[in-house]
Image: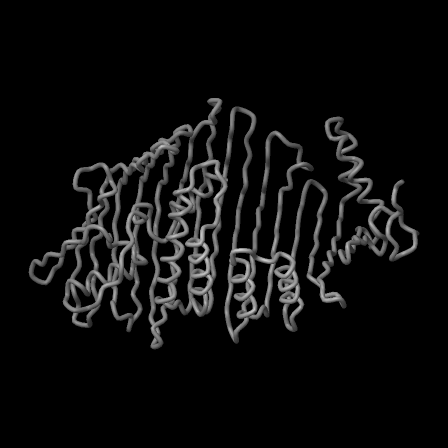
Length: 486
């Protein structure tokens, strides 16, 4: 969804204006260089332009940094202004970091793409940080913006985004081995996006609040810089590809992809990202509208003892869609997938093999299955939950190694309230097309108390439901394939 991507951009660790920069870390040869290193560190290396160096001036004990923003077409001589004071401990007390209150970013057009213009205004802003460039002590930072407004003009219909308040705070901590750990949180309140479709239909989306918590443990800064450089090179190649044309992988891009894979070695010990959106409302035209009370996303991973593990949680609660009956639109969806024990080096070898000039698809599949079948590896869907009207569906799935070295899949589903759902659907003439699917599902189920159970297995090209091959009625000979129509 484009609006959600817009939200993620607005809530990124560095605010939308910080995306204009990227620069190298600075050594601490003098106070000015030390201050620039502190700014580079607290902004994720985004507050120093590689094309126009910041200007540092001193007034007594106070330092001022003027950071030009050459990519802003307005205002003239746009810049970020920073005020900081060095403390006896070597920590920089940054008491001011101010963006232009209004400006325009114009992405130049090419023969294949029209120009894109982004205008912004900021009502109020404040920032404070205490940063130790050596990271011998934790470095906290905080920023707050209110009454933000963005207007986007492009080949698509214009869009307006308004955010009542946006905050960002966090802490950067160093370790003796040179790795860093970051804890950050951003929040946006009273967010509203308005635009129109190509046919002129107004579209609006709003939300009460959105929180993002972003934690990274044991980040290797050298590896992170390698990863950033390779990723930037791949992105530049994608931008150079004309729209509508397939992007072929050139030898240079292939090398950068391999560099990304190599840079992942020892990159970090773990990460944990959690996003929560409250009170989302969307509307298109007068009758097509709906609400989602909560959207929750959690993604985490860790690397230890040369193995990786991770999980992904997605949850949507209190879903209502005005144009659909409640049994068509689930009011609750929850999904959790997880993996653990995957060996790091075989995984990296598999990814490198996939980026060769002429990868062997069959060999890659064999390696992938062997990886999933390795001792101690677990992968699957731990939880599936769907609630729609009176129907409550729960389930799980896992990858199962087979004796021939291939992989199978086992799915376990339970349902409650299917009869009540059937009664609702039967009473609605507009919903008759779903009746055959519901009756077929019920006929293949196994009763279990007041519920129904489906144990589904995928192996060797055969799908089994409660011990019966798919397409064969219960009571047939287990383990046989369904008859072939002639």
